[in-house]
Amino acid sequence: MQTQIPFALAPDGIDPDKVPCKLLNTGARMPAIGLGTFGSDHVPPQQVADAVEEAIALGYRHIDCASVYGNEKEIGRALRRVLSSGLVRRDELFITSKLWNDMHKPGDVLRSLSATLQDLCLDYVDLYLVHWPFPNYHAPFCSVDARNPDSRPFFIEEFMGVWRQMEAAYKLGLARAIGTSNVTVPKLKQILQACSVKPACNEMELHPHFQQRDLFNFVMAQGIQPIGYSPIGSPARPARDTTPEDTCDLEDPEIRAIAAAHGVHPAVICVKWALQNGQVPIPFSTTRKNFRANLLAAVQDPLSPQEMERIAAIDKNCRLIKGQVFLWEGASGWENLWDQAGEIDRTGWKGV
Image 1 (tube, rainbow, N blue to C red):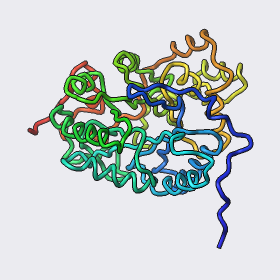
Image 2: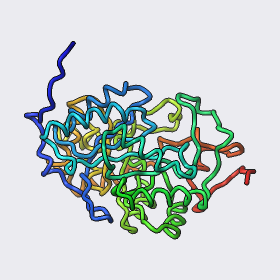
Image 3: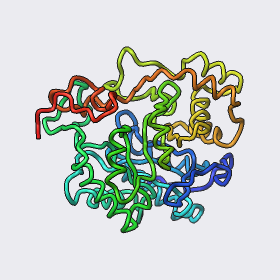
Image 4: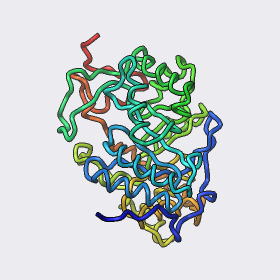
């Protein structure tokens, strides 16, 4: 039987105290960069967990998880090893998880969060997000044309049934902060009018070719911290989320020119832009040199104001994570999920 090497801090690690933090509207401090863990479609769970442990050894203190990623048990074992070493305290870590779409019924939130806490070997999460604002879900590895007959558009009354349960989890201390994900300005306006506990964060797709200025500015104005997923343009996203019109941030001439000037990979420039733009990026990687380079981007060699302006000018409004598999019967296309006309879109909905 192979003996497992005890957890140890990496000699080439980055001092976590030098990594900037964001102050949430709860008063909590969130490290300004995290490690994403969505690799369930192409990376084995244990490989993701090993990356989490190694990332913490290198200086990461923010880990973004979700029950649907299918790797929280493995990540939990890694967290237990880290914390049992005595080298990292629980209050030094910021752990996020998310409520999946098939857990929106009465009583589901506490059940799902309890399972997540058990899997992650934790007493609480620092942030718990509603992964998508509707109960639409799909079978793993389904085709882009798959439709769940139970899928439906967003209705504020239904969502608030979920949010009230999220508020209860917050008041019980099981989630130190709660938030939204994959919402739009029209949806968030309705949520803010109805909620008792304001979202602390909103997780959203953000990268140089998809800067979502209207939503970004709105959440910032509301005192809600944006978290940016797919910060380098999600080159390893599921095939179902690719279309011929998609663009590639890493191949953009401006990104490549700025990367050459700094002597780094284009992905690092995307991470630097995210950090300086104001969102919290959560890039996913299981390659040590890559996730170390991403963390290093937070503490050295910032982009100049002129470089930030150059990147601001390359926005192509190119959404990569379109969510087609969440469409309801009768919807005309993925655009219906994103309220592009400025109001809740229920195109083709014939239900009640």
